[in-house]
Length: 480
Image (cartoon, rainbow, N blue to C red; front, top):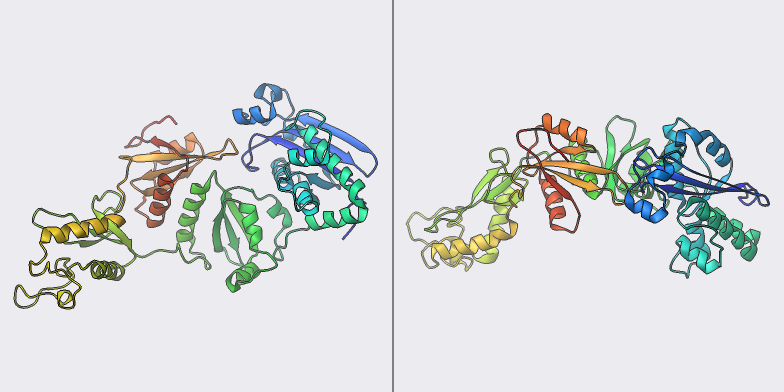
């Protein structure tokens, strides 16, 4: 491996419209070129050709007006590429800056690849006892001169350069070289997987696909840190046989970037059922779905009725309890509930009475029934106990009346996704108003899905922030 300190360096910092390298754009580039002796600086504002969010303007001071007359990335790409090419690429949180540049160059048809050094990792390597390693903490701890406004590209690029120069002076070339080599190691990847492809993967939410020799994927997964999760599959210390076997078969990787966790969960669940990957099991449900329908009456004689999603719309039915993959699972579960709570199987409709009316059921004879079968426990009391127990597994009613779009905003970006539902049935996800209107004009056929139901009920009950927009039904023009 060549000595890094013998090579020319380029210290880079970017300001952007957000944190999603696939959806957001660069607003400023700062570059410090260093060959070990000579230093050259270069910076420019960049017109991102999209609006800059207010919180980004507050952080960086860069506004829409400031970049209105700046060059687009396409206009400055050749000049910037020449400055970066053939140099060790150094940045604070290098994956962020490198990922943005990879994507921007790719959009204008230019390839870019460089050996990277992350000064966050370098700081952690050389100062393991320190708690903070952000650029402000690094500058303060090392007495680095902040020459300009923080969170501006050239100011931050200068700080990164000065940090490395100070490390060289204090630690010497041998120790610094060893640290640089340690933090700049390339990820271990299966043969045939292009490292440049992995470099361009987003850092945030998304769904990834591992393919072998065939057109159908071996595995579909999701993560809140997509690139990090994909690389974890190929770690050198894989101890799980299934994970090791999977990594050895991967020939191709693809992914879908999402605005947030809800989008990645819904997309993963949908595609696993659709594509049936070999290494996914938990979400590969194709069988029917069952639930107990139960509505107490005034004389206490009602009992649960087993119904399937094929005959009852689980998204609209009011009195359903529990979700089961088979009739056997549903019946066995109710029997266990009865046994644990001394409910009567006869009163539940799960056991027939004896030949003579008034005979106790078998459960009462062995002390597992309070006697609803022979009138010892009033049927209304038995019914009330059953209702209280089943209430814990009651299916939630659809709370919105009709169709809704749930807008999920990427917290670090201007990007957002619209997840469209109708009575728990997932109709799809779109990323623009135009696509939303097209989906509503010609919605797909969708049925109640247990995974989508569980994903969405958890999100609605949690602290997740979703903008809920009620949609007209039948389809009509809407404003979102």
